[in-house]
Image 1: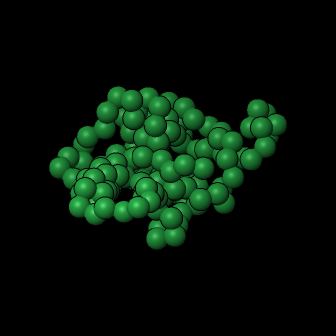
Image 2 (image 1 turned 135 degrees about the vertical axis):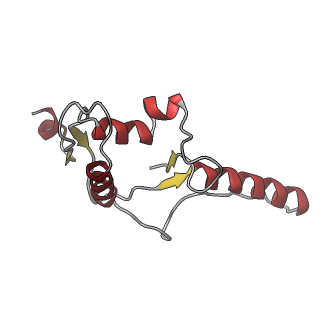
Length: 127
């Protein structure tokens, strides 16, 4: 499973988040949960959530461009930007942290209490 790009971690503006990210990305899932709109997700809570902030991806792209330009190799190098084993988190961990933050800092215009159930079964999800 590929990793997910999330908004800035440490660069210029902590308020930056583009419309596409809110509509379709990881942030959109968090916002939907916080508003009480997303109630059920088909996913295994024990699966690894490979989430990488976009500023880390951009920094890596710049580093890779420099590295590729300054070193000549016989083989085409392959680079990966993942959280991997450095900060291993499961979707259960992400959910617990997100729920804690949403309760501590509720979003305006909440529709329902933010609770999300996880299931790896489409049948259970559809109930």
